[in-house]
Image (cartoon, rainbow, N blue to C red; front, top):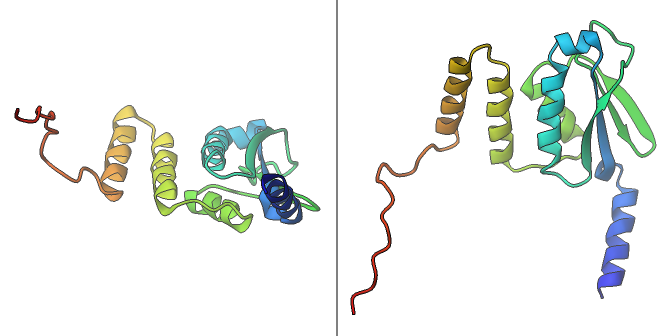
Length: 152
């Protein structure tokens, strides 16, 4: 039963290189100027929603001026992707390496991505409000009603 199932799922995860994707986000001075700290946080949050995905801090990846740079490591392979400067690029990076998330998770992540990069708190709030509307906003304009006790 469960022991065989767990062994089989372990074998599948070991055989599937996408099952253990690790994203090293450069945190050198040059990449930090290009908001790599925010990118790391974005990727950490997205990876937290997907098993077998991890985003971590990295030292310089020797591609200064082309950042933010991300080294992707999967069993038997690793490569560096330069200039991950948009949400679309970050999402594509994850999806190409087997990270599967619900549409709404990516929508929420994009709102956070955009909000983090706004310069003022008013602009951040505005982005969050736009994002809230984009993913459906409030479905009702009525205030919730307290449950009333059943008549005796």
